[in-house]
Amino acid sequence: MKRTKTLSRLERLDTLVGLLRSDDGHTAASLAEELSVSTRTLMRDLGILRDKGYPIESDQGRGGGVRLHRHWGIGRLQLNYREVIDLLLSLAVMEKIGSPLFLGNVKAIRHKISVSFPQEQRSQIQSLRNRIVIGEMASECILNSLQETSTSSASSLYEAFFEKKLLDIVYKDGEGRKTYRVIEAQYLFLHWPAWYVLAWDHLRDDVRCFRLDRISGSKSGEGVFTLKNKALFTEGMEDYISNL
Image (cartoon, rainbow, N blue to C red):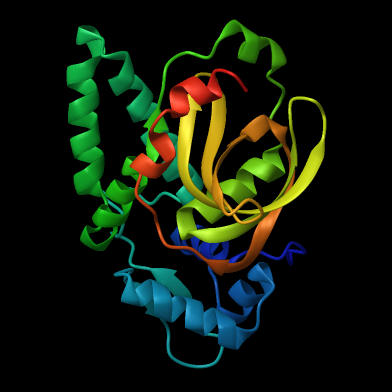
C-alpha cells in the first residue's frame, strides 16, 4: 500500500533498508510506490546505500527483484538516528551513575556497539556521544513543572540534532509566554528526567537553553550549522538550568 506521509531522506533510507531486509519480494517499482517517490529517486537512494557498503542485489530485466544479500547484517547493527541517540543516552546515564555493579558492563557494551557499526559511521557516532551532556538530578521545582514532551517536537529535534540542521520552534517559557525561534541544536543536556537543548539562538544571537517539554511545535528550517565549542554552552549551565 502506498504511503501518504512524506519522509525525509534519512528516514526514507532507513525505511528502504528495512524493506530490503524483509523476506518480501520487491521490485524497483513496488519500492518506489511504497516510499511515495519516483523510480529515479529510488535508484538514487539505492546508489547511496551501495556507496555506504550495503550489498544490494538486483535482477536484470524489467520488473527484476531488488534485495540485500541474504547474509548481510550478521553481527552488525543497523540503527536509525533516533535509535542511536536513545542508545547513546542510555549508556551515558549508566556511566554517570558510576555504580561498580554496572559500570564495567557498560564499557564492554559500548565497545561492542562501537565495533558493530561500519567503520565510516564510527566517528559520527562518537561525535554524537560527545554532544550529549549528562547533569545531576532535576530539582523538585523542575519535577513539579515537568510536562509530557510532544512526540513530533522530539522527532524534529532528533533529526535537526543529528543532521546539524536549523530548527524552527515555538517555545513557551515558565510564565506561558510564547516566542518563535530559529535555533541550532548544538548539544543535548539531560537534567534527569528533564531534557534541554543547548542551542545557539538566532533571535538573541547568543547561547540559550530550551527545555524540551516547553517546545510546543518544531520543524526543520532552511540551512545547516557548524558545531561550536562545547564550553561555550556548558560553563555555568547546571546552575542556570536549576532556576528554569
